[in-house]
Figure (tube, rainbow, N blue to C red):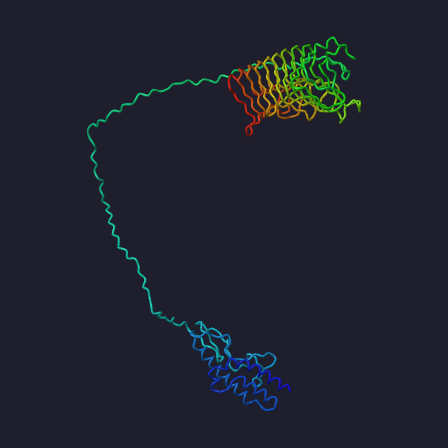
Length: 519
């Protein structure tokens, strides 16, 4: 049984080899194919018949093919040498050549041996038969491709340079005689002569800044001791001197102010046809001192005829109805001028803040109309204070302020008038301040206020020794608008130890010098 299995395995291997060999010339000679032979051998095995004739036929085929292979190998360089020199069948574990022992290299009938050595001439010497002898280097074979392109070389003529060692330098005859050159007539140049003079800087002796606030009479607020009483809208013409003979409730007379706004808060105004005339010194036309938020708007005219008078006044106050001291609920009080305020005397102020009780509310003065100050030492909008105290104050001009007298100011923060955070002074984008009197200024800062912009509008400085902005404090104050200088000795930004800057970004911060000498 074991023998039958070995024969079957051998037949399978032969079948694989003969499939390749089936169409070759030896197969035609033997007149057989692998399938028939394989089937016949299987049939013999099944029937118990001998396959010796088939084995001999296969051995004959293998010997012939091996001989062909060896002959091809001996032909040399014309044949690609195969990796193996013999036709062998590899079926591991199934096939062995019983006649020669096991199927190892040493038992092979034909094999390529490498046993031997090289002699002193570099030739390989071997005593084993079947090995390929050493061959000396052979002559290369030339293959004619049928076409050749001859190479052409560049033909260069030979150079024959003759260098003479006895060269003589040529003789150059010198020029003799006189050569007359035409004379040159130089043109007459009329040169402009000029002298460089050192620039002359004329120092400006700027006058001192002194802001005058009129000393107004004090009176008991809320008692109705004014010409019109309190908390009413105004329509008509009223003169404060007409109240001089009227006895007051808590004051001798009622000539402290034309009208007072106090206590209950609210919003009040005067008509465009109304006129309030202050013809008594140290008086004001309108006074505001309220426990609640309040606004008054002047749409008519306020005329100041007597010296040391005021037009519209805000007095600081805390909410006395709910507290006995300043608190977060303190009222915001605002007075607005949308009409005209005209000062005809000296030491006057059109709109003024007067300090009384300490309070945290905002006290605002806004001009949207016209303020005209014809006298001297007067101010359009003044934020007055008291040393050792501070308030939240606002001064805003969006209208027209015109100053004619000397030592006048558009917006002023005098000495000892420190302010709280949130305070501001501003000539806004629509505001115009025109200075026609000497020794005057647009905006003056002498007490502490937080950094900010003082001017976004226009300040026209037409008078001598006057300025656009003035500061004595360290916090930066900016010009973001236009300052036009046309008065002799006038100054755009004047600092007396303060910090002023001109913000020239975009179209802002312009100082125009129209006449001179100007700084």
